[in-house]
Length: 145
Image (cartoon, rainbow, N blue to C red; front, side, top):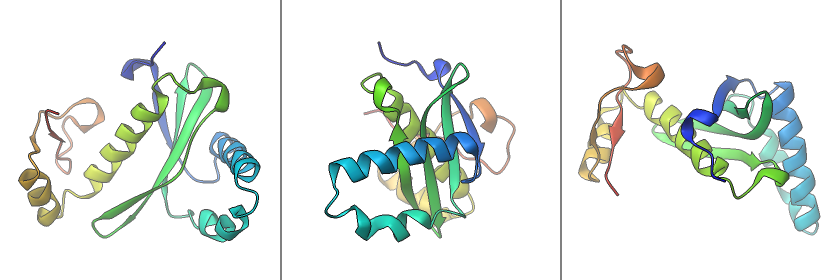
């Protein structure tokens, strides 16, 4: 079974949100299990997310995935992306990354260089959708792949 966009609801939260922190704890536990010899090198780096745009993806009332985006100038860094271990293989990560990309794009609207870069890469403006409809600061772009 693969998730449809309308089945996943995203909530923008702070990095102190309970559901976000629970999922990040699961992520950290899994990373320590997989990479015990090197994970200690990343503890401090992974904690530097206070100013990030954090999201939790829900199916119904159940938090399934999380991620955050640190934006610095025209660069967005995806951090702490995680899908609950029992719910992988259903397309949640793809929907999550698309949502994080949308957040990044919405923060670049005042940067004509970024828009020019998207256009030179084959992206074009598309009709605004969802929460972007009526938002004069948003530019929605798409590309046929």
